[in-house]
Length: 264
Image (cartoon, rainbow, N blue to C red):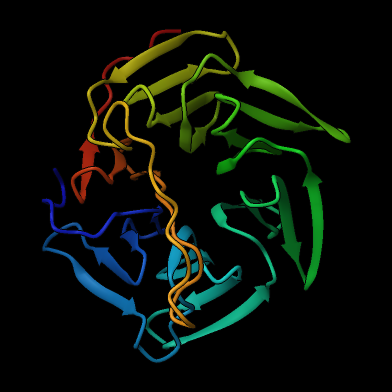
């Protein structure tokens, strides 16, 4: 474990342009510098905190866009202790990624949608998805994991195309060039898929993610105005040297994985 157990979940992960790892842990958030332990970034009672944080993407040095359990997408600067709501009114927001054009693309699990927001304008990219969770972008390709359908799809015109299926319960996804990484909390595996050649390989198994076999996670409802609906999300991020970070939500840790040679 890069971060030993002791976190509440954790949920989304992100690495900024300086290599700083950000860990979303619901009502608490942290950063992890290359040297040293976890540093608090903000929590529910911190000034300018955006709220119970689930999905996160870095948009600069220690600047982030996040999704919250209160149904908001926000731009957050922990150092300035301020956030700006970009869009709100959503049902169970999960993963988020940022397009090269500046748009934030995010998954709304409760209504089965993939959406984007830019300059205050919200656009629906896909509808009728089966429990969308993780979001990733590679070039102009926008991908979303459908946990309920056991697949990853990409936006294609007015609809979607399947990129990878045969999964059990995909959550966090990461795309880097032609490679797609998927955290499958059903099979407890980290899967690498070459979107160009179609080659699939399991690069880590028996991961401490998701619920134990035979257990169906119970959905946690809102806690007053402090938090909206809560649910698990095993996120993934990549460091500047190719290392992969995975939210091990079954034990409250963050794992660092160093993949071996890629099979083409």
